[in-house]
Length: 332
Image 1 (cartoon, rainbow, N blue to C red):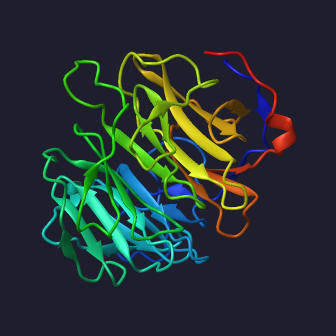
Image 2: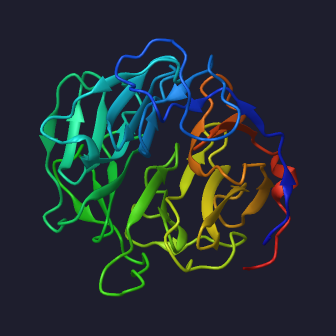
């Protein structure tokens, strides 16, 4: 393991992925997930299908949005109950990216193979937004700036990152310095984006094979920020990375990365940075070998915690004190 291990009190919370039930308007009942291991039937659970993207309200409520291969869903109680949303004219598998307006929890952005769409009523109705003229591939990630909500970043499958200063009407390329795909000739897919909660010009991009990148000038330039995360590029695709930035202290960032152990086994790693991504330190998180991390999210009930959603449930993680993570670990 590269970097110093920090022990975290990871507690499995009762959030189970109901992979064998229909999630459209489900309320209660006894269900069995289609995976092995102990199931918490009475706890919250995510809707049916392999998750593709998740977004949460930043306005203090418990609203979650999840896109899976079977559709788009919303929950107002942290996952106990789910309602299906329809994103016309997109089909179930078309939604690959989600973002919620930081001030209005009902303002939802979705992106994917069909372009970029916005709802002002929590998914009841939708309107198409313009996309960059250079974009021919799917939109894989969306982020809305907390301090300047008109500023939107999108990450694509092949053309890198684009930035809009006016809510999606005008777009500019914002991907200089991002790595090329292993085959060359195009930018790697940008699987996740996170924006500093105090500065819209500072953002982070997650790539599947090349780790994390950071911009401090609104996307004019990007640089790798992988010190302590291990060696890159990875030999093959394993899953999307995820990041969450503390709203209490934006220097604190938590990142989840997946690494292949061999062709059939993937391990989930969680890291924390206390200096804006300059150095990363591994957190000791016990994720079952038959489970895989999917995404990180803030715990809406307590800013001291982050929730790691996995294919078998959720693990509650605690931010580590800054003093514990200031020592520089070895370079990868």
